[in-house]
Image (cartoon, rainbow, N blue to C red; front, top):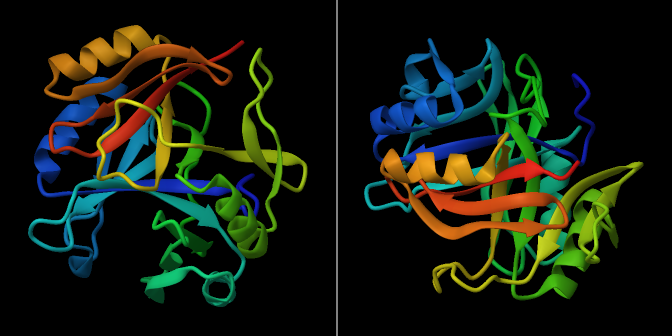
Length: 253
């Protein structure tokens, strides 16, 4: 799987009511280019590229009035088995597993706290082709009012085990899958919209969090949580011009 093991976040994509403006915003923020799907049924789905390599995707919102959102995908060997485990662990199957042309098989689920996430069983499309460099995915984090319940759920679904996360002066709970730290978990932070009861946050790496946050605001985005120092590095939480939430991270050395 091109280095992305089962149980590891492997992809993120954006559902937005204004795909043209999303292209403009992220192109100017991260230097991305785009490749449009040739499948008529894909409804204009695009793959964002960084130096020619896939980093994320975007497509139109499924329904009028749907909240713009970045979705986290976790790699799996068997999307249908993942769906069974989600139900057994007390979660919800939002969209049952289905084939995405010859690219892979995916399903959309919600954990007991209401945070939605997807799984990706790869075929022709393996997931992101680059991670942890400026302009690419670098971290995934569950923000939830019930961390203890989340620990139990994701251990049953993906076999994740709770550990102390990335090194730093403050203990940071994170999940390990095999030998790898794959995601973090944190309670809801101050300054975030009250309607966000639980959600998965995607983090894109940047060289300078302060400069990137300023640039996002200049491009029509919103700074929800200003840049600050955390165990993972210096990060900020932003909204794009359509309202989709995401974070940027200048990783700690």
